Image 1 (cartoon, rainbow over the protein chains, first blue to last red):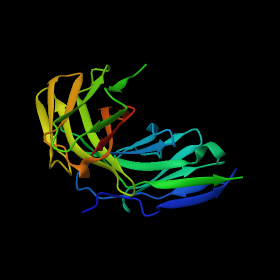
Image 2 (spheres, helix red, strand yellow):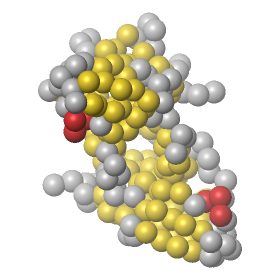
Image 3 (cartoon, each protein chain N blue to C red):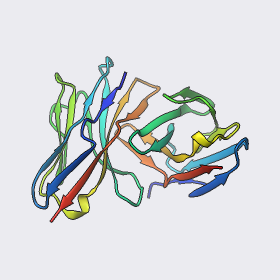
Image 4 (cartoon, chains in turn blue, orange):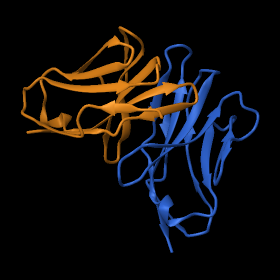
Length: 115
Length: 110
């Protein structure tokens, strides 16, 4: 069964607008962590943001925020004030397991920002 | 500055060859991972290691093995390369709240 689901293969957003990239996850482990990564056309993986399962507040990093809804098992990435340089693949990932932590990724969403 | 280094950026191998992909990290991390990335499939976990000489299968271990003799080095081995193993291979190492990636190795098996 898919543990990390990104249902949007592609998204378009106009420059300066906000955009939400969806991510749902499935785990029975009470301790887990959620990550978002950006992969531009250069191929490097750029860490954006992290949310722990016990964190009370939603994580924020600059223009990135993570809308963490634990009961719904969703961890959507919100990018505010989109810029042309935000055009890239975005991957959601989950760490689960205590000790032997496994890190698994979704299939990604390609975001295109247009002027 | 944190570094995860993969030994090759591009590699072309023949079917049936034994292939070694090397990954070295300089951060003293315990957890290291090997993924393959294919269009439309995202990053799929092949193997991971949480300590020296310890390894766990990921979601697609068939046709691969790994070696972790030293903490800083995690090797992916294709025992007998096949064309369906043509892919981008990414190595990562992790602390609790962030994973660091190498630059990737694009492997082509002909």
